[in-house]
Length: 72
Image (cartoon, rainbow, N blue to C red; front, side, top):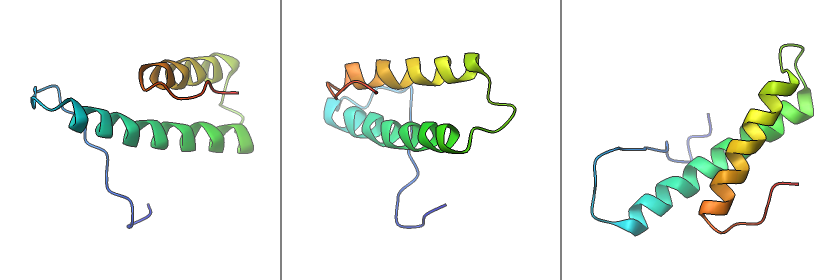
């Protein structure tokens, strides 16, 4: 793990801060995008088409929520 990057925290408790929630989601997006890319690059034998579709759908949903470009 890269020590320079903070660990993303997701809390179900309301903080009253939409900005804080969006920042947490942006951290999650970066982590999920990195994991997705690693899986795509290395394509381990256990990485099924269903896994790929699920990960891609989750990443696309997060991008839509954060108004980021779609996953290509």
